Length: 582
Picture 1 (tube, rainbow, N blue to C red):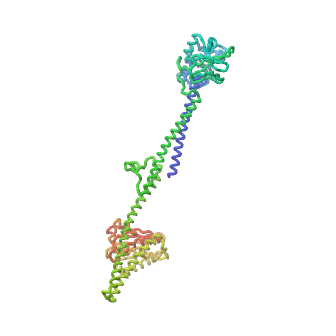
Picture 2 (picture 1 turned 60 degrees about the vertical axis):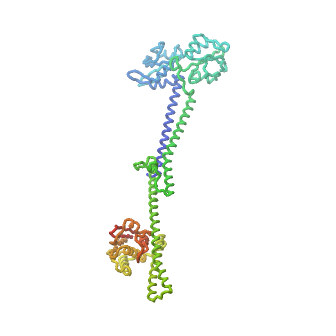
Picture 3 (picture 1 turned 120 degrees about the horizontal axis):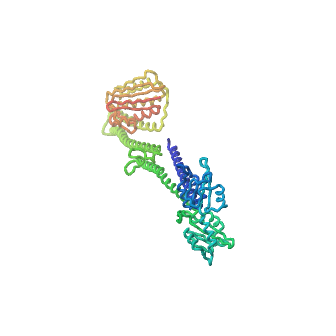
């Protein structure tokens, strides 16, 4: 899988993961807020919010109807009691039931209690539920203490000079309930109060009184009101929501659902911001660190340091001590492999360039020596001919002229070879191809080589292919290939070295030409640099020592004819050069 696909899959996976985390956070927050709002509602009025949950938790266990223990605790905290009735009105189970509550109800009697047609000492709430094919009636009762207290106060208390005067027994009862009382005028303004908490209002609107009568004005208190038609005054009693009898329930951190929702939204926003902050740092470490590492790597390559940046331990930053890629770098495996390959290539090219520079300098020194040696001879003979001290005979002058001509021809050939290598390298020497039968052409080239006065005693043998081979070549330059190879084998080997030239048919119309000698051979360095222009494996002294360009020219000419050339050798075992065409 390439880098592009891995990056796409990685980012898709990360986005899906982040989305799943955010959805999970939102679901958890919604669940928490719903639970808190339900609990707030149960505190205000358990019959409205708690009874449905209580019914849902009802189940048969060990032959009895049981409810959730936490919800039963809420029944107790609300000061209420609970009964479960069968279809005939008999009590099956009961919890926290006072002694004045019946243990059986006639159907009509229960309806009268519920509708208020018959006196009942408790506020009654009824829930009917079918479970397992049986209809169950759930009764929840709570003593309306606030309602009774405000009724008694409106009847027995007296408003005098801005003060509320109440009988001692009512005052003790009010204190025991940790309650307070206010008297309001027709506009809802406070006229007097007793034991009023600091958070209580001094002016009430219609909304405050309506909602205060059925829910909490704040989270800690519940309100009851009684209006006197005769005086137009409104008596208001506030009682705390009790946790246990005589003990106030700890208040919620938030006073209303709106505050709870706002706090939940703020908490969710903070968590999301923290999550994105952590993910940003993680993304930067996960994706940024490898990219910065690769940038530093490229910068080092630009400065000529052909190695991967290392850590304090001297190890490549992208790899473990075992050599495997570190986890955060695996996403960029292809890029790192390309960089490693580029580093090795540049390092190898730099080494080759250094060697070529050294070889070039050595070759230039050799060529300079080759030019200087015949030039010195030419200058020496020229001075001798120019001198007035001697009278040279015609034979001597001709001898001097012959030497000068040979040296000039050698220098001309050296310059021509040098020019030819650059022309071949730059493709500035087009070939004139013609279809040629290669057996006869190579046999003739070897025979003409024997006719060279410098190589008449050479031991060169030719073995043909046994069948005609026709191939398009430039006869002049292809002869130059073979001449250079044969001359190199003879010049750089001792006298008596045998050379075999063999021609073998190849696939289709191709062929393979092999030049093999049994001379001294080459070492590893000599074989590696055999076809280099700037490499000179022997010194340049002696007649016919060559220019050091023969094999480089032969290699270029082979390539120009669409062929390949390779050599193999071992020191002391001769050299074999194979050329494949077609």
